[in-house]
Image 1 (cartoon, rainbow, N blue to C red):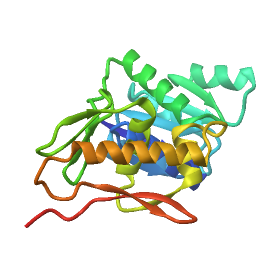
Image 2 (cartoon, one colour):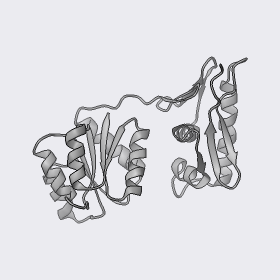
Image 3 (tube, rainbow, N blue to C red):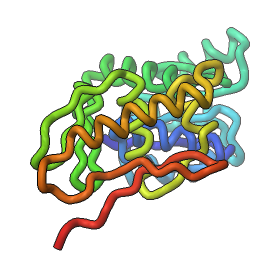
Image 4 (cartoon, rainbow, N blue to C red):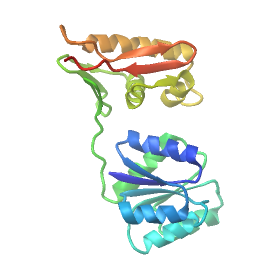
Length: 232
């Protein structure tokens, strides 16, 4: 399924794109209203996440243009929270309206609700990194030739984030924020979680098989998932 993310704040646009890719979307990005209309016309996305305050053409105008030609689900984003603005956006045909700041979890929940109302459904997500497979919906991981291992919700969150960024080091702060939220865990809790997940990765390894993916500790920075090269 394809999503168009439109926001002139490129850092936020990248966060939104990452959040939606994690849910299985193919993501296209645009940074102003005119580019948004071009991308919509060329790509025909299944969903549009659209900021209101855009250069060249604001989000309300973009929403009006698209809605006059198609029923593509649209979620508006804005820092405005006045009732008149919200009503205006919905009257133009937006399917939902989220006021900044908001959490990635809230965005995903709203997007899923909008898609359900539109009669669309995301395919189940299966992560793959080398010979490691993760099914987040079932919280199960599997190494080729080995047994299927059940994960706790936090273990699954951590492994999913590491697999999405396989080959890259993630800071401890980024992981804590992703797994527990901004007011959640601490570094000791993260170390314990990494230890448990490492043990389960070792448990999932089949006897006689090659090295499984492993979680590397980078002192003073964080952690990363390293995927060994496939055996010749």
